[in-house]
Image 1 (cartoon, protein in one colour):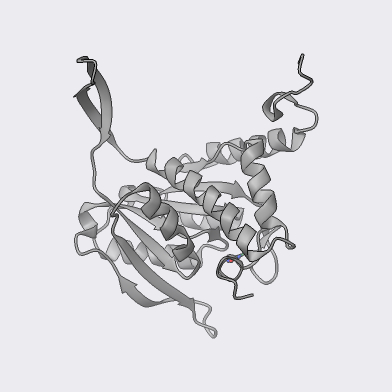
Image 2 (cartoon, helix red, strand yellow):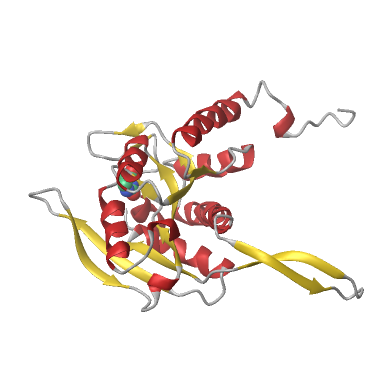
Length: 243
Ligand code: URA
């Protein structure tokens, strides 16, 4: 370019990693028709790089995690149904647009999912948010429901289910079963997730193929401690400063 500057999206050799990531995601998108992975732009990858870095301090971690979460929620809203909506503009002309046609609510999986509530309320003013707390039974390793408080009319709403890390999928499957017990149709569940492990995707979609999953990144797998690798570490600890 005359200015000597080429945008990241046009430089293919230096940004090969972006293209590689995009290829990996597109294979998974084909395997799971209800999986939505955000476009792996250099900007998104740069923000993910900051929060993956173990040297990143809490304040910076929260700042960039919040930015990604906000983009992720906007992406998830694309999965909601729309109807045609016609308005008249100040120039006296009719504009044929669209409007949301269904009511929604959020449900966060405590504790890490609570980090996503701020982004959700910033985008969806006045949204109702329920909470589900699930813990693993140390002996049986089964995911057990400890606490649940949901909007009374949740069965009439689309649900944005919030949990930033999808590891083996045990607790999110339990959370989905709680929503189903409260009358929520699987087609109305959109799981909003920052980083997923392929094992978790496989687990959730094998049991609940009708739900949608919207995520920002898909990682390589799980280590022996069931942490996502390369991952982010313990998201809740890093976000809330309890590490
Ligand atoms: N939960 C986290 O916070 N991190 C992981 O890697 C897996 C589950």
